[in-house]
Image 1 (cartoon, rainbow, N blue to C red):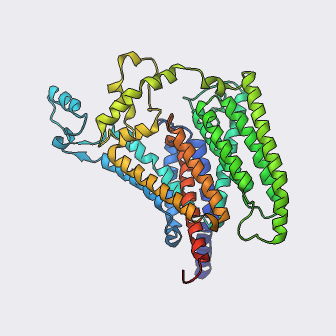
Image 2 (cartoon, rainbow, N blue to C red):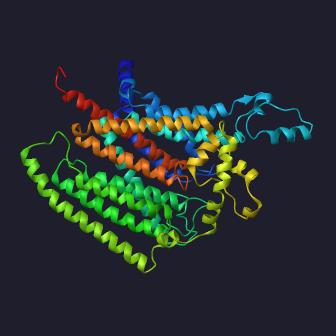
Image 3 (spheres, rainbow, N blue to C red):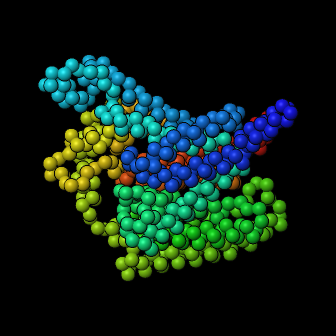
Length: 486
């Protein structure tokens, strides 16, 4: 009897750690992140649920860890952990003589002296509570990457499909928002762009950045391998139709960032579809090659016809003033005026707090000490709207070094791709797709802060892991095909 119970427990344990369970955990976690992590604010109530869930999913990922499968694939995870480590360091209390010697701390020391208070031990960060919040927020990308690293080889390819599906849900959610009132229950957050098609997000810019990235993903998906020609046709035409819908949504979202990023995203999608092989190395028969050639002409005809239709619809929308995003592109709002006016302030803050930074998450409080009188108004600035500068202001030189390490790694990966270009037809296309999505997010960070949104940083993390995995696959294929003795 005890043996049967033991066997059943072992069977359940194997199922709990099996490939299907791992993929379901990955998909479930991303779904939760999309529905509860669409805002960058730290006072969103759903984070009270999401972050503990991230810890639980992370514990599950560690239970299922396969150290052999993780080898050579962990660099993106190391970068996230390095940032988390830097946040921990910023929270370590320092003696008064060291803390007061740090840049821009003298004003706090003077306040303590004037109040007759003995100088306490203080952490490097000027806003410990916000830095703790930033530390908790890193749990989302770390858990996402760990869940991805546990996926089997087949399920890794399906991870992009999960992201596309969730982006599609966000697009449909946005369409539902447009059919109702500006205060309809389809808006998930109290502080949001009411009346705009924000989808599962609080900010229309973040929705638009995701949609632009989805165009690139659909370009790869439409050209990726399918078992049968019928399924390949369905994927191709379905992807083209979805791109057409997404372009229309971006035009009516009212996001300048989305409109600007949509151009390069469409070009990237066209390149991926036009030069895609629609197969992998295991399907190289003559019959399949002839079938593939036949598919090229019809697919390319549909591709260019669709591109022309998108251009025509977009032009007509602009001409008849139905494109809110295009109207806002040339409209100078109060917010845009503020962004341009605070640029000198941001540069001064960057220099003042270098090299140690003000502490992650502290920008809102620190900016109040620098805010000019002529910029005071009923609204307030909770982010710098330039995440590159804010990253340096809050993280200082250590954060810059971590970013430089990631950039150098990316450059090395680019040369690795060039070196192994001819050895993996499938891998190079998904590498290009993931790299282009990453670049779109980084470009969006110049005028906004998409990577401070849990759902978008989760997508970014998956793309970084996909980039590393497929470059590793291309290098391994090259090693297997290299002649002996060379």
